[in-house]
Length: 352
Image (cartoon, rainbow, N blue to C red; front, side):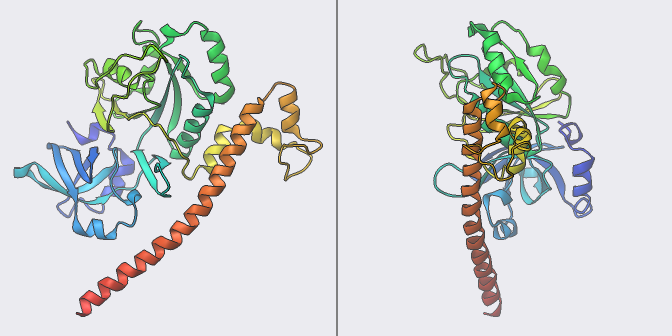
């Protein structure tokens, strides 16, 4: 295992240059569990935790290392342990709002080149879910690829592909069947040495099965799908970097039951180019695409170019983003108050 073969390119080398003459080493976070980190280094895999100063300076979850991050560490070679002192700037990050009521960012994977959005071609295929994943992927800075699994279970493949095409907006769509070993070769151009690919999707869509096939061994446990609804049982329990035989790095992720948006305004434009381009021809700039005269979006719906369900999804996501913005403003104010309290407390302790 050598760092230069794990995606450590010129972007990260430049960021690390400020540290390399100070007895620091570079590593990549392969797994995180309760603020303990398995980190890949030139000397192998070591267990790390963040330094006290790092923890003091961190103001939110985003500041802590995530799977895929490049981190600045000091190794304790005799113990196979180390301390993380900094996280290098991220080239990309796939984020979502944490589940529940808290308005906080959860970074699912960092420094990813390509994201395979895995969906199964059974009754669980959901266009609205694909739209949401695409939106967050575009926002992340990684390139999306829609991977449709379990093609051997699909009796109306052409119909399903036509449905997916209405939301793909130029994104590659690859159909695969691991059971029949079909379509896998079409994934190979994205699996180049040193490239990082994340697998994202709901539980039971075949991410672990695909991971095992690409790895050539049963790394992730797979359970049979339920006969009642064609859904697989949740098997992957954590995010982890996996080095494939061809040199690509894979991140398999647990199925997401809840995928709430996080800072996705630019991703919305990428994902709904058909609606936003049509809206440019509306008679009124503030057209809500309801009952206004001269609405080009409504005209597209009447002519069959855009579905009413897609417009409804677009409006729903806009409302969700507006609500998130309001919540983030309140959170930012709260974090600023906490930061100044921490600074004040530190100043008082020094005086004492």
